[in-house]
Image (cartoon, rainbow, N blue to C red):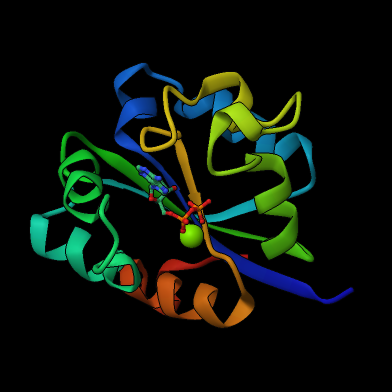
Length: 140
Ligand code: ADP
Ligand code: MG
């Protein structure tokens, strides 16, 4: 399997509960390397652009409210099959459906406030990484 990069976000519900380190340990302990990381406050414009693919969904407005409700930590992970591995470590979108031992099972508050974002394909990973980071910000 190829070495890939993927975009991860630790969401406001998790930064509010001071879970950045605990969440990062899950990724690092499972073989992903954090090769870029930045804590920031998303603007409404940024949140709407980042989740633009969901703009017709009923939860879009609430999701943008939530994603701007506090700081996030945007990160780039590198590793073998990083896109799929990241999603496996996160667990299902709805924590009620997430497997035991996943981040969302252990930390998510709800289907919306589900602690982490992860890119869903290598193509989207490239787009989402470029949303937050310049190539020179990423040090493998
Ligand atoms: P994922 O983050 O697992 O890739 P999606 O891309 O489908 O999931 O959704 C993006 C985000 O929108 C989710 O992580 C979650 O925060 C929110 N979301 C998804 N479905 C719902 C829903 N039914 N109700 C409220 N929020 C939702
Ligand atoms: Mg998604």
